[in-house]
Amino acid sequence: MRLYLVQHGEALSKETAPERPLSEKGKTDVFKIANFLKGKVKIHCIWHSKKLRAIQTAQIFKEVGIGEDLVEREDLNPLDPVEKLPPEIIKSNLDLMLVGHLPFLASLASLLLSGNEDLNLIKFYPGGVVSLEKEENWRLLWIVIPHLIGE
Image 1 (cartoon, rainbow, N blue to C red):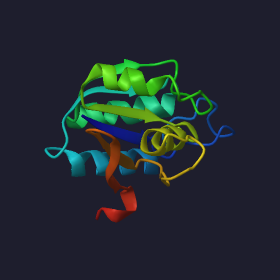
Image 2 (cartoon, helix red, strand yellow):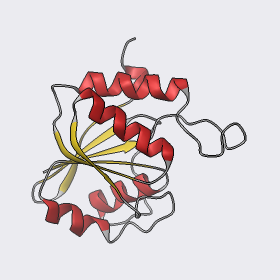
Image 3 (cartoon, one colour):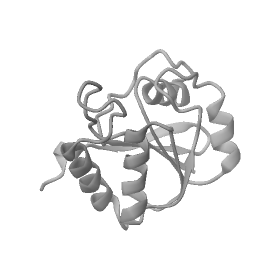
Image 4 (cartoon, rainbow, N blue to C red):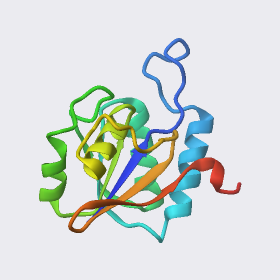
């Protein structure tokens, strides 16, 4: 089973747009990552938060053909607790993508990899993807971030 953790793309500021949609750079970066992963990654389901920037990021991955189903969830917000999610992820037994926010994603990754959500083991970037795999234990497979991919 593989889990892909995605920090939403760069968003506009609250002052510019209170709903915080993706900026043009954010859209470009997410499309760049999604197109890079197309054909390499196939996701059964994309779980995303209810925040507009996460919805738009998830929709780009689906539009490019990486995800089949989009599922809006109430428990993927920046400060939501992470401890209830790992059993649900394992129970799904599918390759999943979670599109969300910091510090939630960093806490979830740390919890899966070490059992301690406070370690902050992985640095996330807007539009970047962290790939984890579960066999006996969770392990980090790779990380891809927008500025590593050419235009």
